[in-house]
Length: 213
Image 1 (cartoon, rainbow, N blue to C red):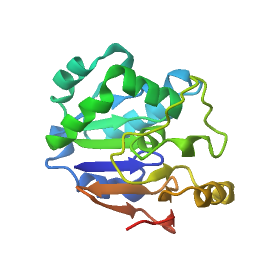
Image 2: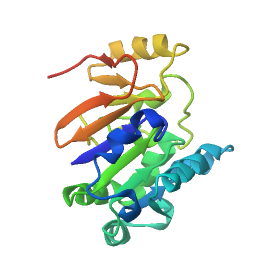
Image 3: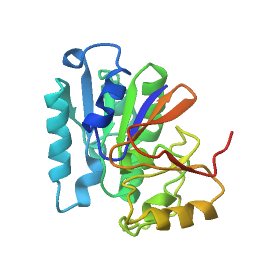
Image 4: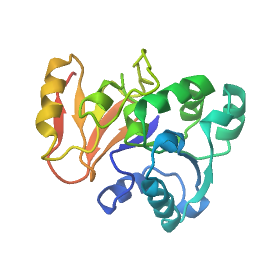
């Protein structure tokens, strides 16, 4: 299993770590770009920026909307790609669409066959044990009234992206009240996962709360 869970896409600081996960050159790597989480966002410049970044690196990018899919169609389509890139946006809405489309099951088959999952912000949060961290800084609202906050459990931790000096105290307070391992990522960091092993890549302090063996 290969995952690259980012806070803000592929900045120069972590790009090489991601490229080293690939089995072939970017020019021959097919990327499925899922921006469903951005549906409710007014400003979608970050989505275009991430697509441009992938193209700049040489990747072949095809967009896919989870609202138009089901588990059968996803299994058929995702198998044609090498990388699935799940963009950020509203985490609660994204997880709702993930479940309703069957993506939560299809992604496991994709990963079992050697595919790579890349998450950005909300796309990274849903890969963890739960998405509780989405509400810690009051930036994400549960506008879909999602009650079940259990994540995909692709990694045995919870991710809090966009960590900086302005919110680290709030993150620490919430994380220390929880019983699970929490990784607070800056926008220049990512969690690189190979099989069951994970590590934080990128510059700066590696901030982990409640680390479990």
